[in-house]
Length: 342
Image (cartoon, rainbow, N blue to C red):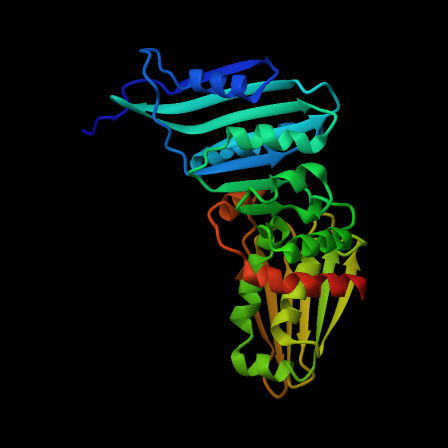
């Protein structure tokens, strides 16, 4: 019979209050890492996560951060800014699993509302709370404007920026903003809409062999049906990825599907103008796609293949496991903007 190595219940502590300096905030956080016997609890973090939220998204963002404790132990700083005299309303929280004589802090959550006349000034409070020995990930649950004062102050500090262009009302404009941020070369950038189409890209790569791709470079048509009436980030990024791989001779057509309301890509057709035509249609409500391959002179092949759907939290967790630049994304982004402008 095995014995549970845990000798105590999880350690959870919290503090809420108002401070006027970052030093006071850091002191309060340090106090929370003292156990009931007066000993400091070792911190076993692997990354810093900074999330910028507004009133509308604050609760959802905090819930997602808490769910990440199963994936990436982290110090997470959730920040929102509002006009004021410089004081900071704070909620501090530490959670630890206690193992015999040791404890491992899985998540340190710091929620800040910074009252300041200069939004960029909140960056100094954020940076002061981060562990300098760990990578810094900035999660922006939409897309920052390149001239956003808070983003401008913290951009050079973070190692990786994770955005969500599909939460913006204008996908084309959002991807254009991302293109401009990537062009500055200050920070590695990726987007959850890009992560969401990973399964589509893998499926297409599996179905189109090298000779077929080579024929397509002489001229081909890609048709993408997207949910709703306006092109989605997923549709534009998929088209941009395909065009970056095939070249400028690829003609892209985007088609709306107003009857589909769950977002993303609905259907993809690839026609190289030759003997073969590929069609992939997502089966709405299921994690599968119907794949049809038409080849002149041969029987039509029909298959149902997996097309897994990943939750927002799973997508974010996956992006927090990557530290390097996402070169396929960076190559696809200008083409996605071009398609959106087309």
